[in-house]
Image (cartoon, rainbow, N blue to C red; front, side, top):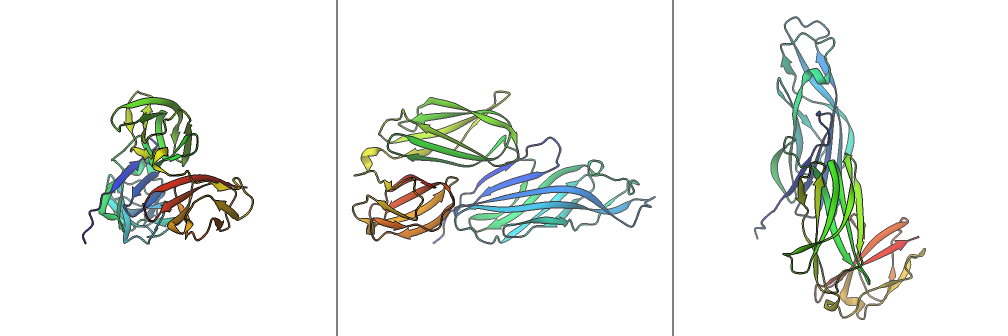
Length: 324
């Protein structure tokens, strides 16, 4: 069977000079690759005498991270640092790793500044990544393709009295604020609240909001991101099922709990698959239920999402859980 792959790609840069390149690539197989490349210095071949020019490479730091489920080894991961003289090849590990390395291009320049050359003088114009893997078709990504905010995830979960929304950004540039919007037909959206953005950031930032004024019927949410200059863009839309769709809202107890033994109130536990996710949406544990008593794996202190899937109806319910 041939499966159509739809690649969701977000590329971000959060600085005016190319001192660091950050890429986020989402796979259709449920994982996200985060790649950071930071040029550090120029390596000159042939010493400090260069009357007619010289060869050089770029020393760089790198970090490759994976977020989400089913994180495999990539098929291809390499790139190019593009200067005013050449496009210089470099390689990256195909799994999660970080470290330092040097490009392998022996680029030539006719300049004579080999004794004093700096990264700024070398004029890095672009950084490109060549990537392929499960759910990621082979492609070359250029840093020149920019978006103001790099949103990694956006999720909505219905609880007893609210809908809890969470989203996460990998980096932000001139981000003034987010506007949460709600719809009951998926077409007409209404204002819910504004959330202040981080402004400028090249680190992961998590946001959360609980909507207590929501109706019990199925609803849809999106996040509008607005820059300081008034420009804006929208996130993907998430749908949250109605309360009436479920015969009974699933709960777990005790919650919070210090134990690894909890109970759930499902009528036919053998029909359910339980998946435990972090608040950022990463799956860390899955088990089929056989009774209303659940033996949890060892969990660090903090919030988790318990996702109960009915294997008969395919209905999914999410429960927020706190491990103390």
